[in-house]
Image 1 (cartoon, helix red, strand yellow):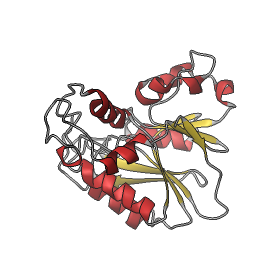
Image 2: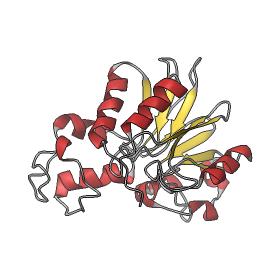
Image 3: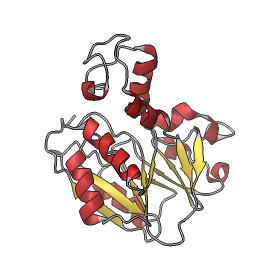
Length: 241
């Protein structure tokens, strides 16, 4: 599935949360305590639910649970999800840092063809789209390739590109704003982009980098009020790299 167009709800709020990176406690506190997510709200996530932090499986289970409980959850595909899917299909030899998920894989960490995802997780990860198109925004994990005629045709760029804002051509995406993650950004720069209503707004503050100044928060952005809500890392098991 390449991309999906989502319409604004008749009531409720629209929140976007950036790269969770296996920080389950932080995500739960942000969603349940700070955002106080309701069934009429829409919650968009920008990918990279896995690795870096302590509980990749817990994060995916939590997202599946929210969907099962009828919350309007719209998760995107990130490069870490794609790497895990690639390892399932092709048994590529990615590093343990990239694929530290034996609890959702058969093979118990073996770097070979036995390393297969259990169906529950394969179905979830395999169904993730690359972008969402909203009335005023595009939501994407990494960004778009504006060097080509149709930025929506380059799926690889949506997972991996960096510094795309330097080549931003608004008319190629109907002058909509872009909300993206993937590139860890200092909190002051995120706040500045929101305050100035920039054409492209980064939301990845590197939640797992909890020991570094200006980093270590999981950020949520309200698409209607432009409110930015940030939760400091509560997992503390992350590897600040």
